Length: 456
Ligand SMILES: Cc1cc2nc3c(=O)[nH]c(=O)nc-3n(C[C@H](O)[C@H](O)[C@H](O)COP(=O)(O)OP(=O)(O)OC[C@H]3O[C@@H](n4cnc5c(N)ncnc54)[C@H](O)[C@@H]3O)c2cc1C
Image 1 (cartoon, rainbow, N blue to C red):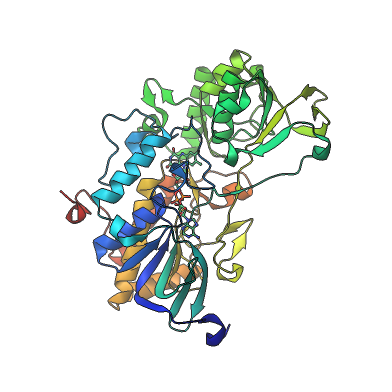
Image 2: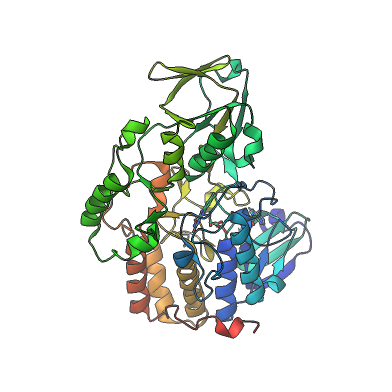
């Protein structure tokens, strides 16, 4: 694109600064990191406040009333900003939202965020990156950090015969609370963490609830021997992955029992080869008949849903808990290499082809995300600082960005699905990132990092 077609009118020159898109958890972590390293930046958030998906009123948020964290508060807080003592082991979405608002206040991040201002388009130009806002304004930035989230665009599969359906079909992104289910026969499609929560709501409120699952999953109870599951697992992180997969699968068998008796398929993979389902409530509901497990859907036939096992059920409402399509809608597809619907990034962060183009939050992982976000945003900041100082380490790192393709699965063979194509094992990721940072002489986060930014 030529300069003339890109620069439509007078633009604001922010070419000494980085532009962060989104003030959700990832954007806030990036903002705190930039602030602590003295990197100049601005955040644009299309909604009126911080917190991303955790604010149910943020239009398009997938949040629902019964949502709780699935990683425990002990391992989920930001570095040096633990979740409050009075929070339960697994905080509610309201508490997570409050936690983020307090985080932004404590580190004085609000003053850097322009609210009610969406980013509409971004183009690379000779002198940097030109950002077009939804108020028509154009601003020139040195670099871009995409932090606009991955759970906004619902993945809606077409069900055979759905045009004949006399009931209603919604996606889980539009689900808010169980009042929708009262007096109805409800089918939830998909047994991810949201699907399981919503099936439990339906189990309580619906006339009858069903959940359709295509494959078997492992269900990890939220507490194991009285400890949150992730705290329990963390205590065993020194055990090699292969052995811990084996021993924990045996333990789950004892704790949870045979899931086939509940009508669920036997998992066709080893433990941790798919994103874990952290939920014991669904098993309770299945054991009490409040939710009935069904297999894959064959077709819809008027008021009936027919399943591949030959059974059929009269259904009034179908909730598709079928996940999300990832996108970065304000950037032309040419800027990111998309594979299986996921952007290909070095260490899930660095664009390999375009300088000063970063993305955070475009990954899935096997534990709480926020400490990992902090380590990741620290790595981005370290690189930017090294580059601004003409430090040779930045050049070395740029070579890695181009060529290095580490396997970050920790020896676990994740299933070959789009969801798992950018899935990382937290321990393997941390080990690799630390090794690189040490080699380059870039500082790790430690106790006391960010204290200079605190209000008190
Ligand atoms: C039901 C559920 C349970 C979860 N449980 C956990 C858990 O237990 N532990 C955990 O660590 N993670 C959990 N997650 C993962 C969750 O995705 C992260 O916690 C986190 O919200 C992701 O943060 P983010 O900043 O990447 O994205 P988001 O939260 O999606 O925030 C993105 C922000 O960008 C803004 N935005 C988007 N487009 C634009 C634009 N064009 N211009 C300006 N602003 C824009 C949005 O308004 C939003 O504020 C859960 C997710 C779900 C859906």
